[in-house]
Length: 110
Image (cartoon, rainbow, N blue to C red; front, top):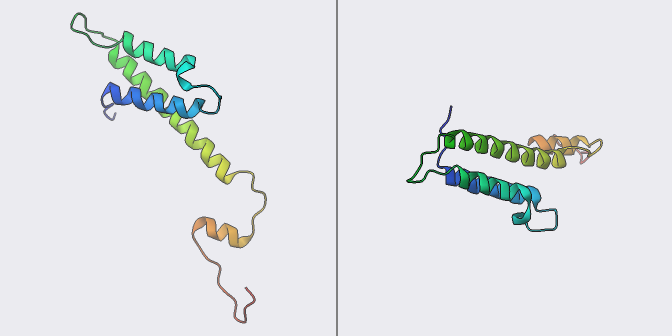
């Protein structure tokens, strides 16, 4: 399993993804219940000098998993919007999508 990295980096990336996900709602993302819940969970599970939180690694792993889910959903939506529902495409357009060019016919017919 790959290293999770610092919890603060995970928290910032998670809040960034929440901002992207809730940006279309018309209200600031900081008023979203998900934003408040994530911050409260990270604050409740931080390590202090008075206590050692045993669930910190578990929370960090869950946050990283949720971050992966949010990123994947956002990237899937972008790919879906780009490549789905275009209807039938011309051979030239399909060749351009995969990085090819169709051969030119002599006499200017293609």
